[in-house]
Amino acid sequence: MKFLFDLLPVLLFFAAYKFAGASPEASHALVTLLLGDGIVASQAPILMATAVAILATIGQVLWLIARGRKVDTMLWVSLVIIVVFGGATLFLHDATFIQWKPTVLYWLFALTLAGSAFFLKRNLIRSLMQEQVQLPDAVWARLNLSWIAFFAVMGILNIYVAKHYSEDTWVSFKLYGGMGLMFLFVLAQGFMLSRHIEEKNS
Image (cartoon, rainbow, N blue to C red; front, side, top):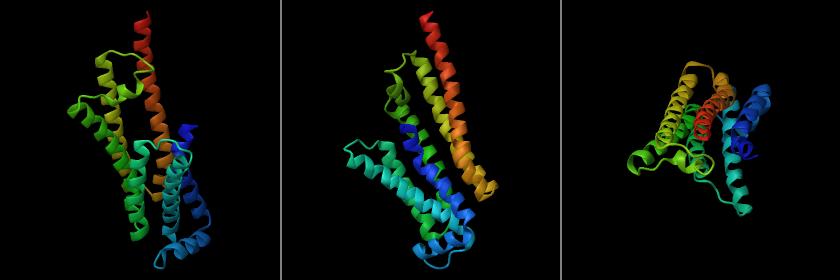
């Protein structure tokens, strides 16, 4: 359930983009009404999707606060990034900013993991997982490095797709590509961890 909750803004972004693309006249009229004149019809899908993603992320935070639940630090960070970069896209009618948003978030994850390990001597992946699994220090270090590399590569890949392929392809990659690569990476990590667990139990 938490996975779907975290993924909600991405799902709504994708749905809004596809809906706006399927109803170009209606979406153009709505976006023009909300953001003013000077918007080209082809810009309407990305602008509508961006607005929906911003509202969805704000809604997530407000829903958690209303229920008296803790808002995770990364959700606050995601909110700030989507408001800044998404707001720039809406204000300037330029998709470049919202296309950079996933890369900034990925690289922020990578920098946080790397900075914590290098400056604070704290392995954040270990802090998150050590109650579920016990591993040698070297394995924890390798696991942390693999996540840093994954987030760094995902940031580069996002920008590569945004710059070299169509906007529609980038939107699809943002959902399917991001989820698919994350699933494969987590699956690979699971196989690696299971090997060490088996070695310990044998």
